[in-house]
Length: 430
Image (cartoon, rainbow, N blue to C red):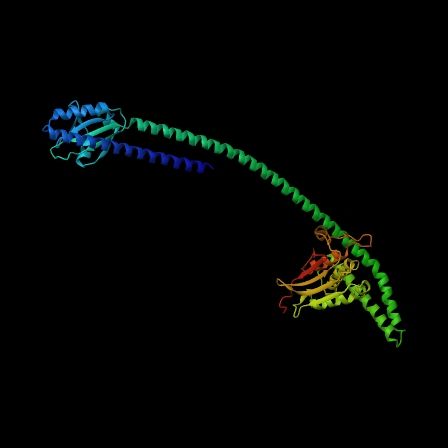
């Protein structure tokens, strides 16, 4: 700010100096023209009366009385000037200018007093005769009034610049104080926002801890009846004999019991913070198996499902049963949203931006932007009356997160919801 004021002041002062120099040049040109005009008259009169010096002196005296300039003559070879009163005045500056045939010259203040002028800069205009035998006419005028006006102009300029600088500094100080207040307010808002985000993270962490505790408790409670189911299925397997239908049913019970055990172990591992197993998984097979697992629910709700699996998908690394469970949870959620409005489901597996994507889209009741941001939190549900626990999507997100992926929900115009799983491909996967 201060540098700007100095630059503006410097430019203004330079402009004042430039104007001053222009005014002095204009005065010098005026004096030269004044001297030339009388020089022409003097030449004519001297030619008429034979070069009388008396006539010359009288003409110069009348010219001095009618104007503001002092008139002098210079004869060739002389080192002084002669006034209208025939007084000789020495001026090395003017004589030197005459010798160089200059039209105008500035006379310093120490020489100006010798011409009867104020001790200020003076300007001399010089006219040279047409007749070599004639005399040089020198018209000298003080630049006192011009210089005084210029001095006052510079003072006014400095006062104006000082006043403007004061205003700039005043308003700049006010602006800086206001900016400081704004920065303090922004800082306070930032701290409040940080505190709010910390509280939200703490709340999510508390919910995650409760989710982990609940998962461990549920797993413990399920393990006993699940062991009974598996044992009974094994007993039934020895008694069905050749009945293929019953044998298939018993085998399905045993298989699903084993699958529940695997999923429970995986969820317990997630709750304890264990990393999932590192197997190469075909994303297309994950989608196909997940759809097969919920087919009976989809058929019972009369919700059609369409699979779209891209060819040559790269493999991903993780636990296949857990990823299947994540997709199953998304499919069940889409089924619940679609069955009351006659919607359908599309499941796609493909690549996007270098990641493997599994997308579940439904044309059900849809989801709002606000609910989409919270639906992945533990215990958040919009289906409490229908028995929803708010754990299905939270479990799916936790599974995907532990596979270094992301799960997002978004509204699907004009009606419906899109759930997108993004997983990094396995290194070296083709």
